[in-house]
Image 1: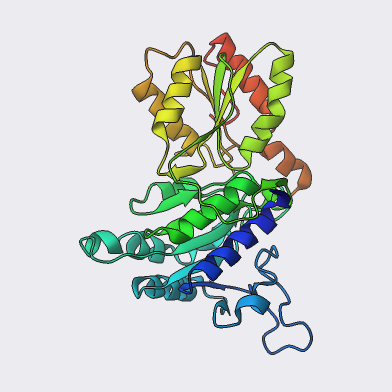
Image 2: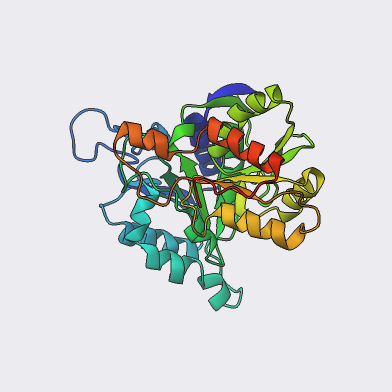
Length: 343
């Protein structure tokens, strides 16, 4: 067990799966770098340096730079998966899925069903999401709820290095298409990560903390923000159960419902825009499964329904923070249906 950044943990998962299975190969823009240029061959490793070093180990036939055409290279990956390979495609930013959305909606998500289960599309698509880096409205969105709406796709949202390595290995081994969402803020965060390969099952949430006063369900990097709120709430005498779903398709409904029933109060923290977000989905789940257990209205914590601002001051105000979560839990404890910043 070693301390590793999420960036390094993801790279380890890619390398170990490529060593384990010769059918695994990587596709994306600038993931190798240096093609036709003097100097260092492995120049980039993707926009965040995640695949740096893999070219030297596996060669250009398995670490493939592509033209700037998401539709073309995602289509290449889908076709390769249908033909029996296990591609890992990198889309630099989730915002760019607008270019190739038909490939997701009508191809990779549908093929296994349309083939009557006789074929599989074992493709993993890695992408980055999230605000906080001054990248403005076209490179900072949190769009995983859009894809959760589409049947036939599995979706992983790791919040830390340990989960990232294990979930990515499971994604690559899965016979279904997987979208793997990496928040930019977690790349440099560190955690204890085993050196050997391991896979974490999809559909099993992690309970980060246990307390009987209020259940907080948070997604992706918002789990880390919620962690910052826990000691502040403890100072107020409020004990919180914090649940990290880890995957949203499949979603671990049983663990979430059990936590809500035990606490009787629910706060959901989601960096996605508030309308039709995963926060809305968990609130609906609570209303459906726990109507008699709830002692107070559900409180959602989302950013406002506006594009991500470029201004550093506005972006900081846009993002939910620990203080927002503390305030939301206090409202849940009071049981007053107060309009939140996301409503």
